Image (cartoon, rainbow, N blue to C red; front, side):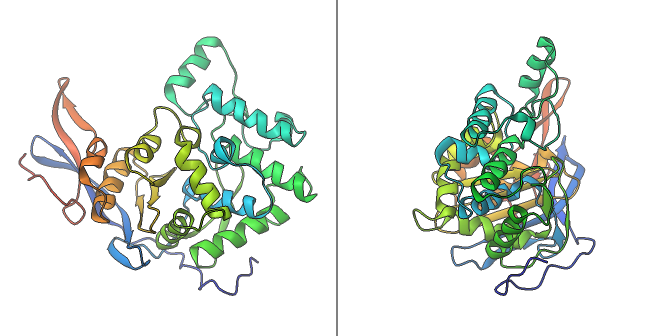
Length: 339
């Protein structure tokens, strides 16, 4: 359906052969194991490290949003800066995010009623608690994908495409996005389903996802890829939220482009094309960032910059008694299990 003569065959749809990627250590005992897959790419695009299954088909979820944003810029979306970052966002539902989505819609002469994403409360727990206390109801604007949906509507309006069915996989907008996914991942799409927000979701491999974000992060200045990368780096809070770990990671590592996705997905890439991608098999958020940080250290990021992302402490009686630790194949300075 999505023709791309330069893309390789689609990844196989199979049960992924995940491997241990993180240990949950309490009192010197491995209490739990998070399985998953990890790929580390060098600046030349070659695989420097792989754990688990990096070639099986999987759904990148929101980690694919930078690629979707590139597709929209290629199709004429004129945004840059904070609004383009918001187009690639899984935002927290802060007032700055909601105001940004309104600005996007207003530029195209559209309103919240034109959005087809689901009604939801803000993603960030603290922001959501404020909404609950104030008696505010779920909103399409507050839903974390509203920036992407507003950008989709703007792109459709600019091209004279129909608006009411912009989420249909056969819509010209979604066809253009699919072509860009295949172009940047270098492989055909294996399956198409529906993401939580209602938009089409394309299945590629973890290797293909890493390759796509490496190409976005290392693109020549002025290209659609570079415009998206620059916007997300310069406006990290718009791509996530003021208190989110992904924004903190981009602020901590100069030039880093990073994006998370539901079900334990994390991707990150540097301006020279070095990149990592992580999938935690059970979708556990607590393993996502420490595993990604360890992978970034393996690709050459200064470990001192990554210390804040080493993993949460485990508490016993309110005191630290353990931690989530990447497996030794990833950790460049592993602690002994007895620590």
